[in-house]
Length: 380
Picture 1 (cartoon, helix red, strand yellow):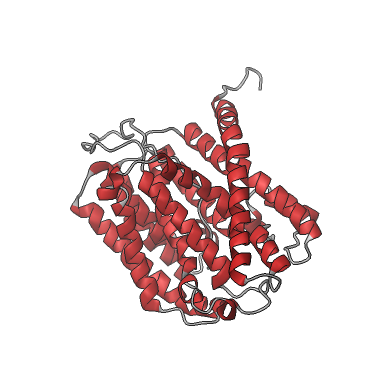
Picture 2: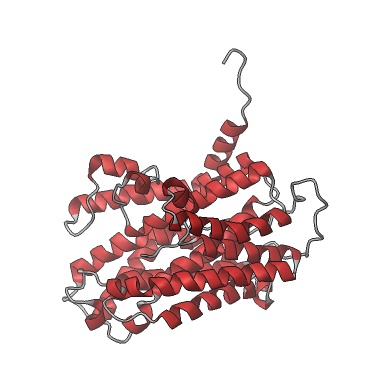
């Protein structure tokens, strides 16, 4: 399990009534922005960046990162767990984004959020890799496949290592899209967060091929945990919602501790199963704290900005930071090179957000929504 942030979703709760025929439960009045959740998402991105640059064994420093950063590596070797935190947050915010919306509105918002920055990130990464021998090599056709965000389905190398989580996210969006067609209600969400991880594990245990791929058992508990936490945020505390959180925390602990041996191989140093298990509990507590908990009331413009920068930072950080490290390691102090690598990734992320995302989000969203809502012409 390498690491990556998920694409940020809107953190403005939909206020439309629930779909479905039964009477909607009474909603708890909440603020329209979750600034602390935005901050938590950015922190998760920074943790992932730390893992990629100083935690996992890479050739770009010329030495094992454990030798270059002997103290820092004791912490950053656990940075891959930022993926689990991202998936919990994604379960929360994607359900929040979908609630009360129809399918065209949901699809258009996701396309506009994910693809413009992603396309530019792929293009400039391919340009870098054309001149940098240390980068990845997808070839021309592989680069084109990367533009679809479905390269994992075709066994094509991703332009950036962190892109693998986007394929998991797309499958989660497919699940939510089907959910929208059926109608999202509290009762149905409760059923999904209990049954999905179990059915996914059954598919995995029985080698059910396509079903296993669609349900992605390794990560289902984290998305489901986020969905259950959203129910607590939207409707208030209830025994069944907290039971769903606890159920998925237990399953998440199992997944995280099971992966510790593999993480140890990747890092080249011991990754403690106890630490990984405690991290999952802490992640659930943090997401509650910044949503339904006391920090859910925190509001600040800069927190929203940090949240907006999370996705572009995730998209762009690895290859460009590695290029900086590969170019300057050994010539300058390792912490100076690390700071330069992180600064390069941040500058590129800021450029992606302000020059691409902010300018193209609304036009792309509106164009996709028009296309999905357009009535077929007579005779076609």
